[in-house]
Every structure is written in structure tokens, then in C-alpha cells.
Image (cartoon, rainbow, N blue to C red):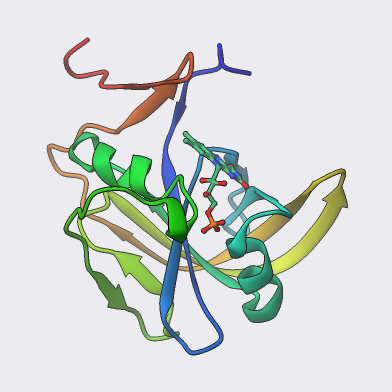
Length: 152
Ligand SMILES: Cc1cc2nc3c(=O)[nH]c(=O)nc-3n(C[C@H](O)[C@H](O)[C@H](O)COP(=O)(O)O)c2cc1C
């Protein structure tokens, strides 16, 4: 799988108190256009999994190359996160957190879930989409490394 180059997303959810929680994910793809639908695969040992099960709503934030530090940061559980990168959220009309600065944000309602092994495949119908991608270069992940297609 490491030889399949991907973009990088951050999945945003809310904890039981309504505080945003974020996790890096690249098991993400388009499902269909009508209705606009995507999928993400979430491991059962993540904190995010419990929050998605409870809320059935997620934000999917497509990272730009300048957000590599955030991609690394949110790839660790909160107790293992290192550094103090700056980030902020904007809540949309459905109270889904958008990670500010991302190149695309999808607000999705979970409309299907398929448990397989230690992951659940979540099918999300897009309720809102926001693009801020003018001049943006996506962050990528390939061969277990962060990759900047604009420079390498
Ligand atoms: C590039 C990259 C992609 C990842 N993709 C996924 C993914 O698609 N699904 C997943 O469950 N975990 C994925 N992870 C691992 C999670 O980001 C990691 O387990 C994180 O600590 C989970 O956070 P949480 O437990 O706070 O929810 C990925 C990690 C990296 C570095």
C-alpha cells in the first residue's frame, strides 16, 4: 500500500463535550457523484472511531502542503502529540468543525458503515463542500513519507 501515492486528509469530529477532535487519514476516496458521496476507513483503535459512531457526522479536510506539520500532529493520539502547531477550526451550519487552511472541506453525514476486520468503512454523503484551493498544492503521502509534488 505504501507504493500507492495519496493525498492526505484530516477527519474532524466532536467529542462528547462538543470539542473538536482530529485524525489524519488517507484511506479516503470518492464513491459517487449523484448524490455526492465519499468514504473513509477508520481503525477501531482510534479515538475518532468512537466519536464517529456516536455523532454520525464527519468533516473531511484535504491538506495543502503547508499543513504537513498538522498531518504529522494529528497522526498521533492526543497523549502522544508533539510540538505545538498552530491551528483553528470554523464550525459550519451543522456544527461540523472545519480545519482552517485546508484546501477542501467536506461536511458529511454518515449514511452507511461496513465493519471489516479492525476498520469500519464509513460512507458519507456530502452536505456541504468548501474549496480554498486557488494556487494550493496538495500534501501527499508516498512510501511512508510526506511528499510535496510541487517541489520534489
Ligand atoms: C499518512 C497517514 C494516514 C493515515 N490514515 C489513516 C486512515 O485512513 N484511517 C485510520 O484509521 N488511521 C489512519 N492513520 C493513523 C491515525 O492518524 C492515527 O492512528 C491517529 O493517532 C488516530 O488518532 P485518534 O486516536 O486521536 O483518533 C494514518 C496515519 C498517517 C500518518
